[in-house]
Amino acid sequence: MLQQDLKSALKVLGQDEIDDAHALLRKAGYRPADFEILQRCDRSPQYVAALAGDAIVIRKSNRVAKAYRAGHLSNWLFLLESDLASGAFGQP
Image 1 (cartoon, rainbow, N blue to C red):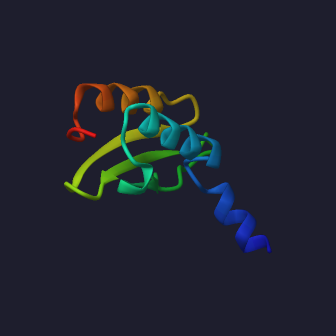
Image 2: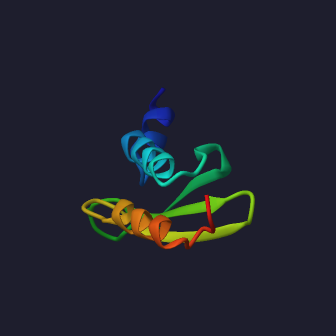
Image 3: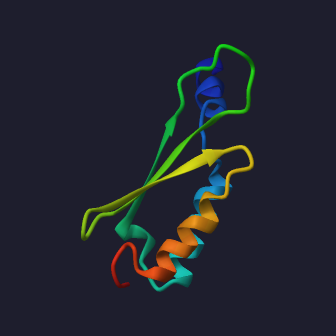
C-alpha cells in the first residue's frame, strides 16, 4: 500500500488534468482514444520542491508527439488547447 501511495505522489499529472485534456480533445473534434498522454517526472531535486516534469501527448494515428512542461502551476493544458486549434496534431 505504501509503495502505491508513493507512486501516486510522484505523478506529475493528476487524473483531473488528464480528464481535462480529454475534454479539450473532444471539444476540438478529436477522438481521445487516438491519443496517448504520458508523463515523465524530473529527477528528484536535492531539496524539497514541487513536483515537475513533462506531459507528452502523442497522436497514435499519425505519430505526432509534443512535450509540455507540467507540474505545479504549469499551463500545459492551455498550450495543448492552442496546439489543437492550430492543427499541430493534424486535422481531427
